[in-house]
Length: 102
Image (tube, rainbow, N blue to C red):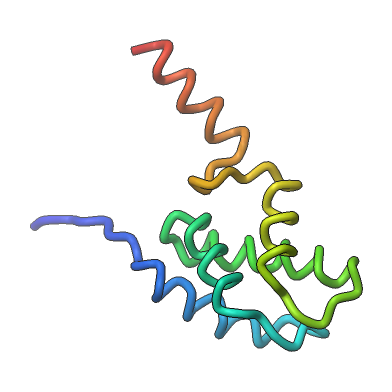
């Protein structure tokens, strides 16, 4: 029996994001670029994409925006210290410790 872990393609994660986004109150719209940026930084994992979408939505609400745009996404993810590869500071520290150890 062969087990495989496969990542979702970014376009599918983007669709998952957009569907789940409908449950977030007060934000009425998200553009495609924003959805794709969240999908890209989620590393192809729907669970992470949904978590990031919720955090980005929080930033949009604080800024009193009714739409999630690419600037809001980038600002929120930068403030959360999630880099362009979707890694946060804990991920980077973990990888660096593996590199130093081995």
